Length: 128
Picture: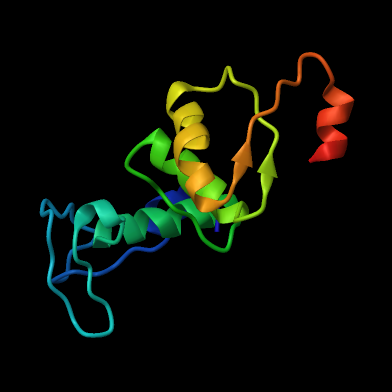
């Protein structure tokens, strides 16, 4: 399908005969036992699911995910690739929320971050 077609139709769900997926203006949901959206901020409403499917389709990806904020996207990305015992080389001039996450929360998860790379970049890389 062409990109414009994917933008309009990928992931489309029929609801009560609607041609287009309606905008669900609810924050909480009940559902069937196999698929139970609970709360809109969990990114699992019918509208989120259509958006995820459309973004994946136009990117040619297996899946996509949207988040409620940039910090949610940053922390989700970092936590999907880092785990206990990992060491991240990062500069201290990062966005404040990312800096705070890496300095205060990541160590509790066993993730070390930050090196002063200005003086000895090669040493920092070899120690990592």
